[in-house]
Image (cartoon, rainbow, N blue to C red; front, side, top):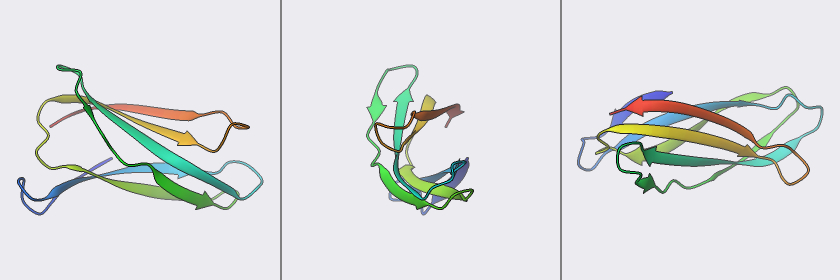
Length: 97
């Protein structure tokens, strides 16, 4: 979910949020990794991974910061990585700025 720009377009940041849910029966630590790729140029925008901890059945929003000056068509990918014993969960969304 795009949450708009905080500050101005030169010094501000664009906020985005991803909702995750622990549908298992145990407490779980995980990382949410993000990939943002310009669909026209192939340029990848580096985004820092975010560590999370979740109780069984819990839902939470993970907020991330993107550059405010993005222009063009992008593919945003969120990857929930809970370790090698668990399947990766992936969500994709096309966004235009």
